[in-house]
Image (tube, rainbow, N blue to C red; front, top):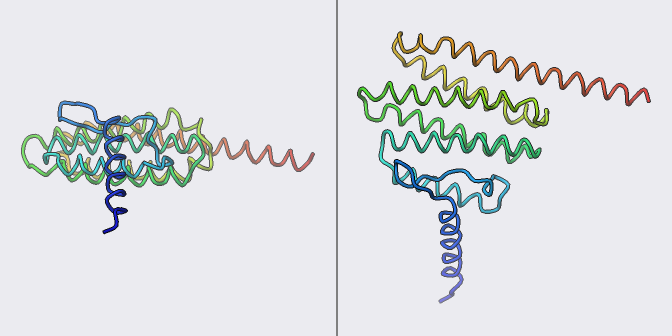
Length: 214
């Protein structure tokens, strides 16, 4: 019998153990996989990091614990996307953006998994996390490479707004009214980012024209 399959299995388990040993930290909900600078989509062992996240979700309790994990993972993917855009790697940024959306969907499912008085609290936490993420992005957006940020982060913005509107539509009238100003704030942040794109494009066009004339 060939020992190759056994060796491969041992190697995989060792890599998973290495990743988990460096990334698994304690929280109020037990073991939570938190982002570190060592694990990004351009890292060869990133797949094991994702596998660890899936294991955490698999063994998490439905409701608050799973929601907390999904929101943490979504934020991690958000930061990974920004990092990949910053170093001008649109393909790897796209991977992080896709995973960010996946965790938003999973988090949204976790909100209503146990109907009751806690649903409103969960929904408020979820929506607040979306607002905070957009504020972070708007602050750093102008500093990122224009073409890569437009390609990778504008879809992320659209997804975030979509989830915000979806959750707000499921609130009571009083709860939704409390987020009316937040919706206007989000629109303002999006406008700031689009204005930054237009300014950057004008500068690039102007520079190109000057180069041609030279």
